Image 1 (cartoon, rainbow, N blue to C red):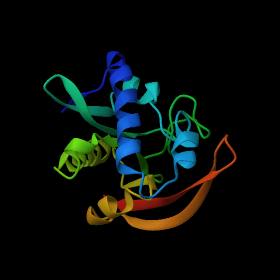
Image 2 (cartoon, rainbow, N blue to C red):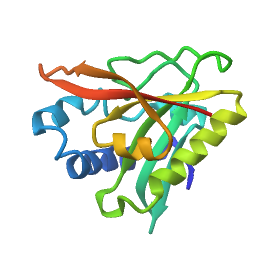
Image 3 (cartoon, rainbow, N blue to C red):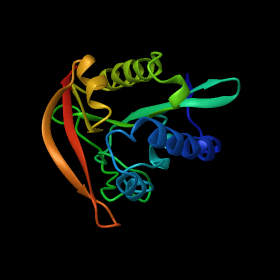
Image 4 (tube, rainbow, N blue to C red):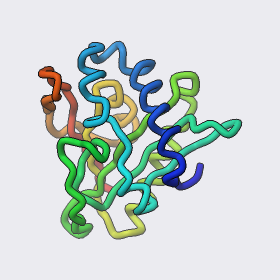
Length: 173
């Protein structure tokens, strides 16, 4: 595992497409997945600049990515529907878990856990007392296994007219 760089962005975008197509087909329609690309699902260059986004490589290929943020944006990439780079207050606000994507061939091998544990450790070191994320339906079981609790069900409106059901989840550190 290493910190992502701007040079990784094309590979991360490719991984997002593969991950969404392979791991979310059972929970979201093709129309929902397509509508979420670039808005709900995408790369956030601010996280890369902040050095809070991580990748895992095997044979010089990025097979997993994910990160955390000390900024208000809860999900999405640079073209996201909820982009807000204002800093959070670690004393009273939770840090954000963001943009976890695993290559389908490497799913359920502990890669997401590795990244999640690194994110939580980094956020704790910066004084955050809690973590929050907007989870896809496919991600809920993973986050529940790691101590997160469901807080709020949301329907995110997408540009193509459909909505994407997601769940806001939280965990105390």
